[in-house]
Length: 126
Length: 126
DNA sequence: AGTATACGAAACCAAAAGGTTGCATGTCAA
DNA sequence: TTGACATGCAACCTTTTGGTTTCGTATACT
Image 1 (tube, protein in one colour):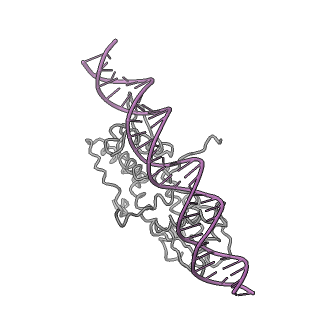
Image 2 (cartoon, rainbow over the protein chains, first blue to last red):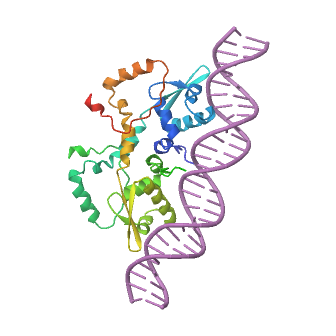
Image 3 (cartoon, helix red, strand yellow):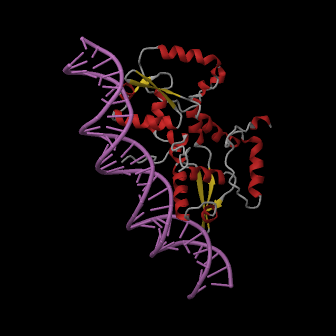
């Protein structure tokens, strides 16, 4: 077993609608579990599990205060999403790149599967 | 049963790493299933299922040509992701909004759970 | 000290996800 | 027309996911 096997990544974390609502709720306010769960039709324990998954993905931060555990959103991991999305930006500034895409599609089969770079590729600078 | 129950949304579709690779592979090239599956360590059928999920989410388009089915990426649904992300943009242009956030956090408990708007909120225009 | 509150952990469950193999069908090539 | 190729579909299997209830324990209240 690898030690740093990040079991839950951002993509998976935000896949669930409940977790997206959780993030939204915790955007501005730090809240304890019971208060949070009052906003959802599921049990407190279920909410707690969702919070754990978000936590593993780094999207929330927990702070124990007395008997409660307060949660707050942590936006940093969203950068990975942003970066992933930026790979497809070429589809939106379609003026110049439409031609480029066509040309690329003409090339012989290669498919090197290098994956979207994790740092934003500022196409605007072209 | 509601007729338009979109079983798979974008968030779910991109949650799986294999599907993200699929999208990447099909970004520029239209490819038939067998050719696609040569790039993955799983069976052709498994790839086919992933393609279906992507298709349901609107992220790929299929075109039957003779005996093959060619797939190509369809970027439009990513707009929803983009839009969802934009809700958290306030965290990145942190100069002015840091204060605003603090103030909001001060307000009495309300939590109306209105969800991120689906149309991009151009904060740049402030 | 005794009770109420906040939470996590464990055991359990049904359904969904991700994968496999085998088969049926449509299409292309001799 | 006969065979090879491309694909989808069905049946099946295992693991993960999202949820529940019950219980233990730490903290707070009086």
